[in-house]
Image 1 (cartoon, rainbow, N blue to C red):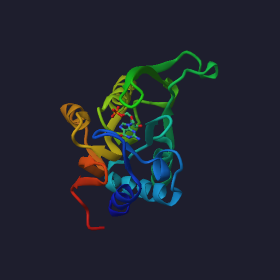
Image 2: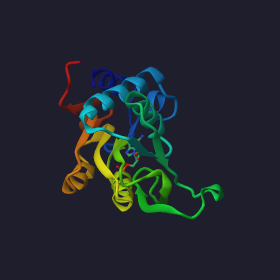
Image 3: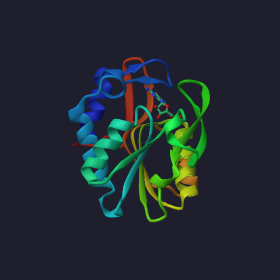
Image 4: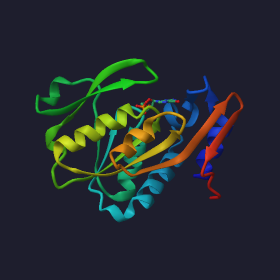
Amino acid sequence: MKALQERIRQEGQILSEKVLKVDSFLNHQVDTALAVEIGKEFARLFAHEKITKVLTIEASGIQFAMATGIALGVPFVYAKKKKAITQGDVVYAASVHSFTKQETYQVTIVQSYLNKEDRILIVDDFLATGAALVGLADIVEASGATLVGVGCVIEKTFQEGRGLLEERQIPIQSLARISSMSPGHVDFIDETPL
Ligand code: 5GP
C-alpha cells in the first residue's frame, strides 16, 4: 500500500535494526483517514472469504480491526490482555510473549464471542515474531471457528512470524513488507505502484 510505505519512510523512526517506531500515525497518534484506508484494503483483499468477524489483540490492533470490520460490515472482537472481573470465567486463553515489551502475558476472549460458524479474519498492526498472531490463531482453533487469514499492517520479513503462520497454512496479507531497515533507510518487498 503506497501511502503506507511513504508514511513509514517519512515518519518511521528506526530504533534498532529490528524495531520501528510509528507512533506519529499508527501506534499512538492515529491517522484516522489512513486507518480507514487500511481497513478498506484488508476488506478488498479478503472480500471473497465471507468473513463474519474480525479479531485482534489490544491495544494497537484495535483501530485497524475496527476499520476492517466497518468496511466488511461485520463486528470485530479484541482479545484482552488483562482479565477483567466483568469478563466471567468462560474464556479462551493463550500465552503470548511480547517482542517489544519482553514479557509473557495471557490473552483472553469470552467464549460466546467466537462460534463454530464464524469465519474469522485476524488483523494486527505488526507481524514480527508472530507470537501474538499464533496465540490468536490457537484461540480461533480452540473455538472451532474457521480462520480465513491474517492481515498485518506492517510485516518485518526478517523476523520469523510469517514462517510460523505459513507452517499452519494460514494465508497472510501484509500492506507494507519491510525487508531491511537502518536509520534513515527502509527497504520494502513488493513495493506497490498504487
Ligand atoms: P509479534 O512479535 O508477536 O509478531 O508482535 C507482537 C506485537 O509487538 C505487535 O502486534 C506490535 O504491537 C508489537 N511490535 C512488534 N514489532 C514491532 C515494531 O518493530 N514496532 C512497533 N511499534 N511494535 C512492534
